[in-house]
Amino acid sequence: MGLPETGMRYAIIGCAAGIAATHLEALKRVPHAQIVAMADVATERGAARAAEVGCPFFEDYRALLAANLPDIIVVTTPHPFHAPIAIAALTAGAHVLVEKPLAVSVRDGDAMINAAEQSGKLLAVSFQQRFRPVVEHAKQIIASGELGELVRVLLVEPWYRPAAYYRSAGWRGTWKGEGGGVLMNQGPHPLDLLCHLIGPPSKVWGWTRTRAHAIEVEDTAQAMLEYPNGAPGYLTLSTAEAGVERRMQIVGDKAVLELVDDALRIMRFTPSQSEFRAASQSMWDAPATQSEVINLPGDGGGHLAVYNDLEAAIRTSQRPRSDGRESIMG
Image 1 (tube, one colour):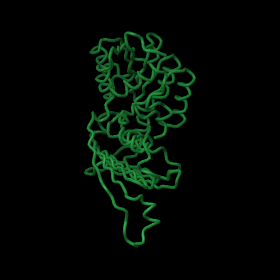
Image 2 (cartoon, rainbow, N blue to C red; image 1 turned 90 degrees about the vertical axis):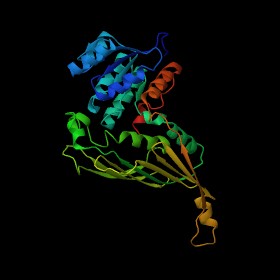
Image 3 (cartoon, rainbow, N blue to C red; image 1 turned 90 degrees about the horizontal axis):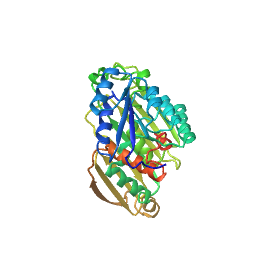
Image 4 (cartoon, one colour; image 1 turned 60 degrees about the horizontal axis):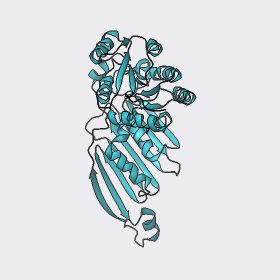
């Protein structure tokens, strides 16, 4: 695998989608990237977007694959269509970047991963928040062992949406269009970050409800987690709750990490919780703590980093940071 001297040739399937505009803005900043084709069943909007870019438009993605195979296919369709399009593109010989989530079922995700392995092409997923400076810093801290053994996890993710959000497109809030609700639309990013930072839990118990919106799918999800060492975790996701900051808290034996937006709070114990617990002669004391807040603003996890990472992976024959197997964790 290697990059042509003129840069990579891209095609976007699902080009009429709102998120496609974000991908187009990112591709403008990728050196020498060429957008050579677009496709969408929404022909009027899709053709207009292709005309703006100056590339051929196809109503059927299979016609696009047959007519003009690019180096990379970008899939921005509604979630249930990710698997068949990605598998067709991989089988045809293109690398694939698919919007999150990878798929709406584990079976579909496994089929996509298998297609990538069989074709020798890369399958990447747009989990761009992995590239936020504050997330990268948290990853380094955890990898260094500074937190010690995992003690507890908390993930609170309110993504408030009014009813107008679900009325904005016919596929929103439907099983056929999204394959789920908050777990399939808003939830994949924080769930991916949690698994990216500390790995997947060994057990999950949970429930979903449709509490506030007139939609088919869930607007609220709760889960209890258990990690391989027995550490507990709790998460809540909702599009029906406002006024609370999104927060991830990872408690370790030696330190606590708390991530709120682009601020990372680190609270270190001296000595560790386990050492103090065993050695203290007091019934009520706790280990001393020292806190530090690190602000590392970025672009909110922009898609440019995803494209740069994917092209670097193709150039070096490495895995992208968020490939199919990584992405199925969340």
